[in-house]
Image 1 (tube, rainbow, N blue to C red):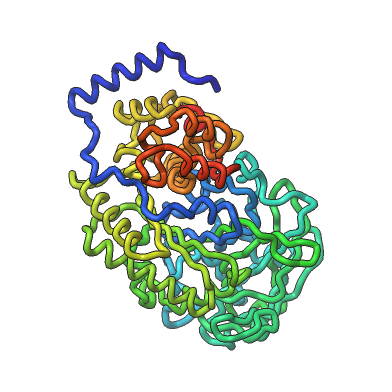
Image 2: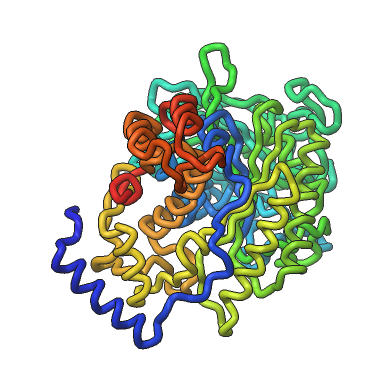
Length: 554
C-alpha cells in the first residue's frame, strides 16, 4: 500500500481543520504525562517474562484487542509459552466442541459461571479463565469421533504476520499442560481422561488421584497429589505435542465410553503450550497468559468474594492462587500483571481503592506461591463513547488514580493510551482523521502488514459499532502500537532518533548538539555533552525497534 499523496493529505487536513474550527475541537487534556514508571518495561518485556493480562473484554486474545495485537506488533524476540482458557471462540487458544451436551462456563453463556450444572443446588465459579467447558457423564451424553469431548487448538497462523512470526515451527519441541477445575465433591470428579497429540501418541490422565502439586501448599509439583476440590488444577504429565498441522496445534481430549452413565464431571479449563529444549527445560522468552472475560470491573478483581450468581463477576484470592500456581512454568520467571479494562463510570477515590485492592490480592497470591519478581502495569485505555458528557473527566480521574499508585509503589507502572492519543474518539470524525494524518498513520506498518488508517474502508474508524472496542486487526494493532511506543519512549532515553535502535544516528545527534541545552539533556546538568554520549554508548543496540510511522516521522 502506498503512502497518501501530498494532494490528498492537504485536502483532508484542510477539511479537518475546518471541522475543528466549527466545534469538533480537541478535548481538554487532564495532563500531558502519558506514563509513570515505564523505564524498565522495554527490557522486561523483551526478556524472559510472563505477562498475565487481567481485565474485561479489552483483554481477550483476539487480534482486534490490544493484548492479542501486542503479540504481532511488539518487538518480542521469542514468544515461548502461551496459556488460554477453554473458550469456543477463536482466540489464540480455543477448544472445539466434540460431544453433546457440553456446557460453556463463561460470561457469554446464559448460565454464566454456573458449574456442576446437573447438581440439585446451583454452584458457581467466577474466576474468569475464559472459559470452562463442562461435560457430565449422564446416560444422555453422546461422545464425538474417537470418544472425544473437545479438541484444543493453538492457532499458530494468528502470529504468522507479526514481528515475531509463528509460535512454533514443525521442528520445535512443544509441550502442553492440561488445566481442569476439579469437582467440589471428589466422588463426582471424572477419574480419568485421555489427551492425544493429533495423529500421535495418547496419554492417560489420572484426574482423581494424581494431578499437579501446588507450590503454595509446599508440594513438589511433579510428584502429584489428589486435585484440590472446586479449584483449577493441572493434570500430570505435561505431554509432547509434535505436530503442526496447518499451523494449528491440535490436541483432542477424550474419555473412556464406559464412564458414560456415571454422572461425573470433567471441567476443562484451558491449556498451556510451551517450548522446551532437548533436555526438556522450558525455553526463556515471553509467556503470554490472561485472566479476562466480558464486562468485568476493577471491583471484581479485588473484592475477594465467592461468586454467588450466574453473572456475579467476582472471585476469591484462593481461586486466583490455585490458578496462578498450576499455570506457573518457572517460579523464578519475572511476572508482569498487565491490567487493562474499559473505562468505568467511577471517580478518583473509587478507582484508586479498587485498583489497589486488585493489586494487593494478586501480590498476595504471588507471594503465597513464592514468585519473587512481580510487577504491575495499569493501562488506561483509549477514549470510548460514554452515555453522558463527562467521559473525559472520568477517564482523567481513573488515569490520575493509576498514576498516583504507580508513583507510590515501586513494582507498579502506569500508561495512558488515552493521553498518548490526546483523548480522541476514533470514530471517523474529522478530528480523528486529522490526528491520524498529523501522526503519519496514512502509512502504518504492523508486522508484515501495512494499512492507511485515514483511507477507506477504515477512514479513521478504529472502534467497533458500540465505539468501545478496537475494530478489526488494524484497530487492535493501532492501540497496541501506541502502548508499545510509550514503552519505547520511557525505556529508551538514549534513542534520540526515535526508532527503537540506539546507534550511529543517536551518536551523531549528540555530537551535532554538543554543549547545547534541550530535551536531549538526560543527566540534568543543563548541557548535551559527555553524559549523553556515554548514555548512547552504554545502551548501544536494539531497545524497542519500531515500524512506520514512528520509525519514519521523527
